[in-house]
Length: 93
Image (tube, rainbow, N blue to C red; front, side, top):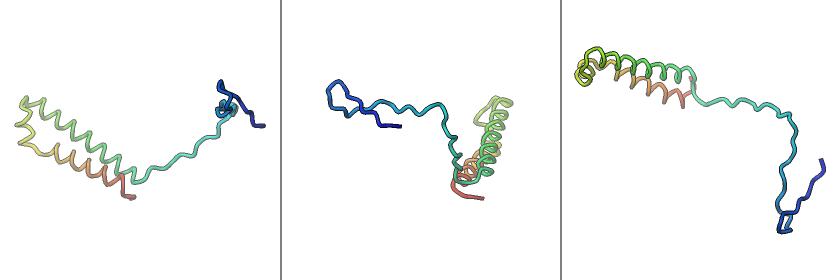
């Protein structure tokens, strides 16, 4: 395709129009994210599971602080999920 030279309103010709590339665009190659997708998925599931368990404990007893002080399970599961997600982001397993 021949180069088209356009002149702007000031006569400098420094500004050019958009290139007409047509309708076909070659597909981009998918970029692989670093880390382990399995650990990231397990970490996300653990976080969601810990939140659901904590909400269940809080709503079943009515005492939010007392329920979480007596049962440390949801907080531990959320912490393990966060650790697994962070490790899964950087470690290839």
